[in-house]
Length: 282
Ligand code: SF4
Image (cartoon, rainbow, N blue to C red):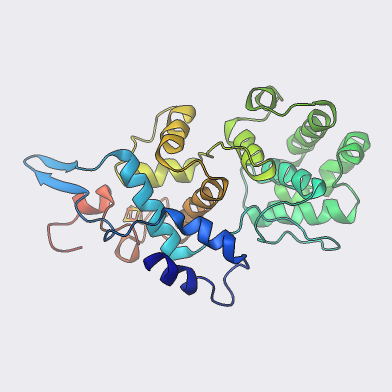
């Protein structure tokens, strides 16, 4: 009943256009229990979490999804278009390649800047591995200038294009061997372009989940990735939605400085918020 209510709520016009089955899949993790109830207890000298980290991770997914709705990542450009849209991810080879390029272009910059670079690439006929491999590097750098660090990113785009053109099997190990492709970019490509079940960890994940009391924040990338992968269903829609919801939450509430805790959907279960407020003030 709760799932159906939230499903209907998030089908409202204006919400990024998702199919009914997609929405129902994404909502499949929502628990029927009241959000946040009983997760922490106050003890002498501090606060302790009663539930397992996995339970809190599931609870946070439910709360973020209920608050922000489906995000429809990764944005890709529809046939004939020039601007990436949030339509549920790639369905063609060209769009898969676009996701790979986007994962490189969005390194150390906003998606808006990366999106402008993709629009330029489309206009120049460069959203194609063979064309990227053969284009002059300085020209490619000029075209992707809006993304910042364009000289370095142009080299990375050629490397990833070569990798995709030459490699038969796409594994995490092989993509991590591409110079300049770190685990976050590799997992973004694997998850959003090729539908492989790797959870993407970024600085927003570390920020939100360390504040929530789930992780310390300085653990190794793979340690946090495995924690998430062991906590949530092995479902491609959930993996994709959860990471994009984390990004949305960091941008809309859990800022690096001065987070908007009073209006935060995680306020009742966030350790940082609980510890900074006397009992009963939340
Ligand atoms: S309550 Fe504050 S610190 Fe905690 S997740 Fe929300 S915005 Fe971030």
